[in-house]
Length: 106
Image: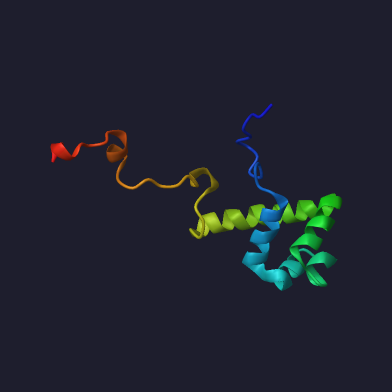
């Protein structure tokens, strides 16, 4: 039942995270120009937007599409690491990680 969904780029991304990312990226004004819905243009807030988007499938689809396009653009421009490589990097080379050295080996 809890199988990973490698072909679904939205798997594990909440609607709130998408809206927050888009607001950070574009601001309410530009977001309202890109997706013409009142909750982005008149007295916008995260909570009012989430309430509307959860009830309105066509608006949610537009937000998801813009989110995916924005993430894809950021990855291409190097602003954001790809979703596939978002694991925290360990210090040192692959060889250092594979075989820890003793202090006596130096």
